[in-house]
Image 1 (spheres, helix red, strand yellow):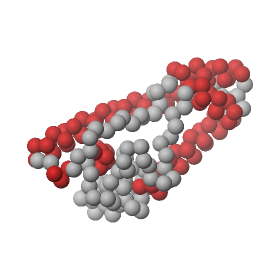
Image 2 (tube, helix red, strand yellow; image 1 turned 45 degrees about the horizontal axis):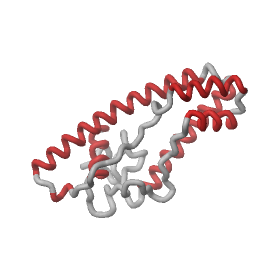
Image 3 (cartoon, helix red, strand yellow; image 1 turned 30 degrees about the horizontal axis):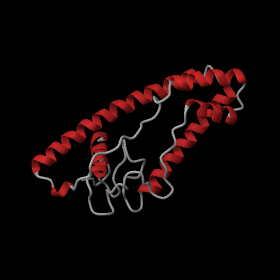
Image 4 (cartoon, helix red, strand yellow; image 1 turned 180 degrees about the vertical axis):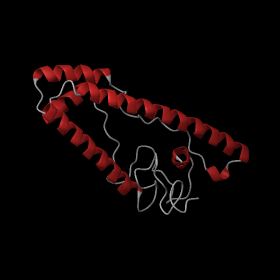
Length: 186
């Protein structure tokens, strides 16, 4: 089901159906209230965490090294999509080639996501040797809160008008009114 949801999302991103259900915003434009998260440099991330968690100088030095070690390994960076094409105007052979390309991209994304999740666990494990228990508890609380906010933003930004599924989109989300993975799906 996850692959089907990812394929549907990728299809929506690459093809141009009529406005409304399934339409992704043009590249670089996000729905109101949604922003692509800024990816911080290791130095920026360290400074932000030092202030937020009241880190000692020694903790800051260790954290900076940790943030450098994991720079670029903790988030999925969106790649520029190719030319957008109308799926409805493709020949059967073009559709088949397109779907094969989408399956390949989805497999790559799943592999990248698995690697990111592994890196995030390792990062937090290493972080637990730098932060004290109180700081680590606050960090984990902040991470859970940020994830909940991302999920709510996805639902607000992609719900209602229905550009993407509620429930965080993918993986595991379903289209409004059923769709892939949901009750009464198509």
